[in-house]
Length: 193
Image (cartoon, rainbow, N blue to C red):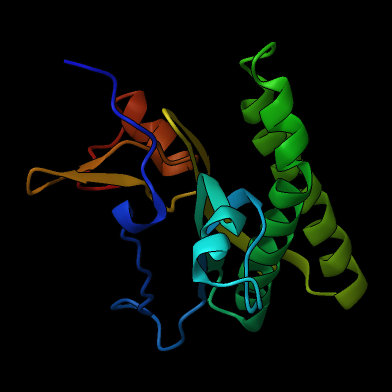
């Protein structure tokens, strides 16, 4: 079987939807679906349709994330919104340098995501302190960076990442919670947790 080619823009279907769930009245989720690329995006030109094909942007990676505010208060919703904004900005700002360096350093994208998460965390802590928001200013986060043929996952808290394939949904992330630690050491069952 030959190597599969990088998917083109039209080969990728992505959509997002949020729902408050069954417990809370307010939805504190924020998400992002987009692409990182290089090239030129043509809005309008006088050079003609045939020449316009040369000036296309090339998709290099898919970026998707969801953040879910913690605590039920307005601080969680704001923390989730800011986390998505800051991570999109941070990843897109560093992406091209990382893409260039990846050939010699295969860990570069893992480091990029780790550093972006730490920067975002520090920023959220400062904003919470400044606003006097305290513990209610928190969010979970799950971020996917698909860089053909690799995929990177950044996951914080108990938002989940799933793969849907052949009609089956499989969770591949692991919660970073005390409840999950208790399940892992056999103190609690998954159902009780």
